[in-house]
Length: 104
Image (cartoon, rainbow, N blue to C red):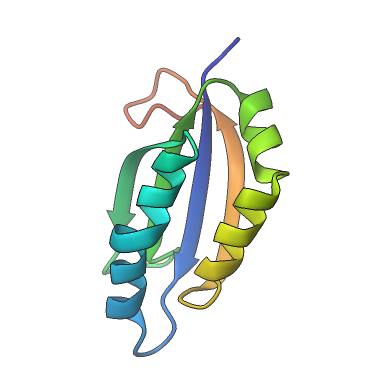
């Protein structure tokens, strides 16, 4: 089975960029790790269109990723991120041979 990726994207509400980054580093990513989800990449976009923040995590496979996003642990953690982010989305992707490890 192909390794799965859970990809989060969002924008920062006005004036909440620092708070959001502190939450990510201090709570969100450590909690993901505690729940068995490894953070692979994070991109902060300063110029251009598209989400300001992209966070890519790694899971054993896409089935595991789907089970994780259905869990109450994920729903609670994801809900906390809404306090610091807007236009928040996530998607499940298969890992692939591209440089980012995502199958586009």
